[in-house]
Amino acid sequence: MIRAGLARVLALLATIVRVVCSVIGALIVIHAVFVFFEANPSNVLVQFTAGIRDNFGWFTKNLFTPKDPKIAQAINDVLAGLIWVVVGSLASKLILRFAPAAPPKATRKEEAPRAAPVRQAPPSQQPPETPRAQEEPTPEPVREPEPVPGSEPDAEPSGNARHQARATARREDADAARDEAGEKAGDKAQA
Image (cartoon, rainbow, N blue to C red; front, top):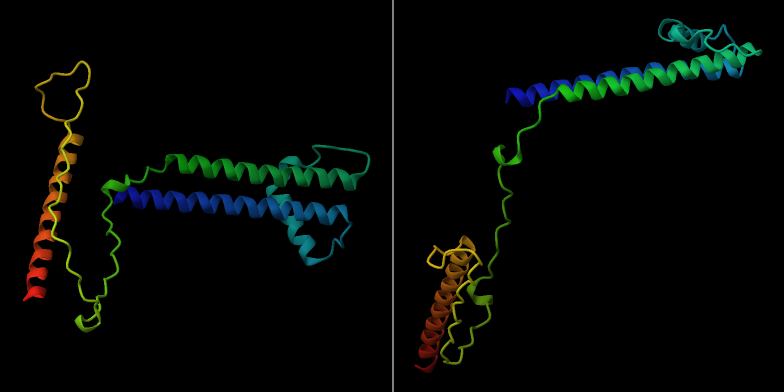
């Protein structure tokens, strides 16, 4: 339970890191678009994105210096935004690597899905049963499993062979019970 809680906390932390870094990167790229299209520098939105770029994208200022200063600033801003997105994604993956693995499904305590209840028609609406012809069922021969080369001939039968033998016995019991019920129904119909 503690491991599951820790895994959830670390997953939440990784998501927060990825989202915050992506938002910072996006705001820096928006500033690059404002610069490239020569937006009004006295606009509040342009000033806000310039402040984000100055605080979080300072490491790429004057990295590239082409002749046109507008293109230089736009390239440097886009590069800073891209670095923020990549670093945020890598940091998120690193955090998730430290998260403990979830327990296997076999150990989780989950309820099995419940089947829907079967509705039966009232006896007045059920079709009458037709009596079956009185015939003896032919028993299916029980096949012995073929011996595996290199195994002992007196060894205990494998789990699969035991399972097949039990299934055959259950089928035979069900057939016998059905035949008995058919005989009783036939006797009542004749009387």
